[in-house]
Image 1 (cartoon, rainbow, N blue to C red):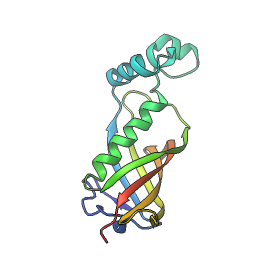
Image 2: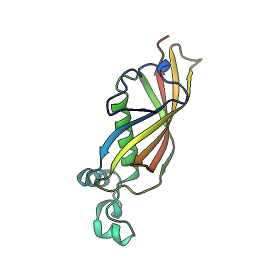
Image 3: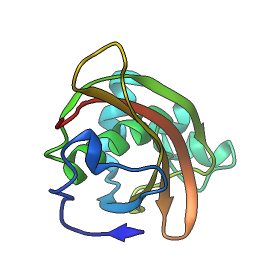
Image 4: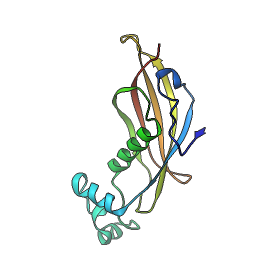
Length: 154
């Protein structure tokens, strides 16, 4: 597994990604203010907004919104692969949230390339599929699959 606190600058073109490649990246500290701001705008459930209500529901405090965790993955992936020649992502699949995420938790990502191929219908373009595991230490908190359409170098 390639692990780095620095971006993977050499992963730019479709040809730079191969099936089975693994990457570890990110160091995102969850902040209560950001969790509350996100919840107020997009996911105003009481367990995302109110400490007492979250505890009454059995949580150890306010928990982050699942969609926020997915958005944080996207930011960490862009930071990790800033030179990737991504054309568009047609979507994410199999999004799962396994464990609650709290303020102060530090998240990182483990990504594996599960498919990489040229597109027959588009010259010098291809597609990669990524299996993304959002981790808190050694604990899996969320997982999602994503697809990127990319430019090919040749």
